[in-house]
Length: 284
Image 1: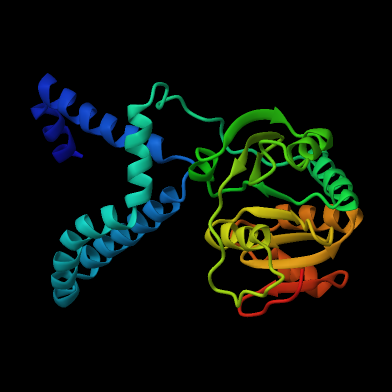
Image 2: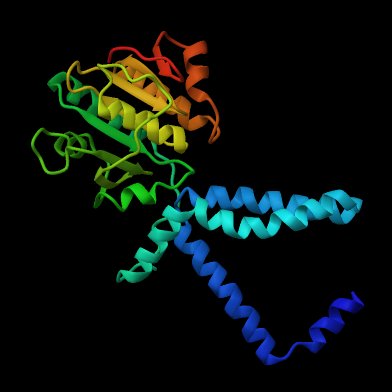
């Protein structure tokens, strides 16, 4: 305690300003990355580094300390390379007016939201209107939201059916839902790569699998050709759902912890569903 008081007594006003400035820079960078996949990656890197430092200091392992002294400088080069897409988006936001304005915090979809999505999926299925609705969870989807058209409108079945009405400006792409709001539409998503692409597997289904492979989001897909309703989560997909089963599976997935395998639990413990994921593929 005496050492801490001695250090504090040596601080000058300039030192305090210096520390606050550095803290402000780190806060600004983290704030800009909030809502992206980079946050989870940075959290993992920080936990790994802190664990390594604690182990090396407490146990005083000579060889381990030497290894960490060689690895840590390399991370200063590796992290910017890995986070290059996120860092580019941060710089782009800095160059745009209003780039520092925060988005709303993470919210959880309500039963009303789930019901609206299920009703919309049923209506779109009956009309053979293709749709892709992505529900954001813990992992931020801001990088995909920024590529689409911002809406920030309350989730209703009528709105979703209007978005995916054929030949409208927003129907080609994904609608992203955060909490009880449709935050954006016409969003471009990554396509799944770790599956054997079937000739009947459309771009919407590959995008649904792709975004759920990279994040903990939930994706609802309506096939334009067959009207089949599907749900993707954690890189797996269950198909041939009706309105009642869609509501049930969405609630099961929201009750499962982020990163969990709620879809597999649903398939094992509930009603029958055709599963697509991993190396499997089937006609949709």
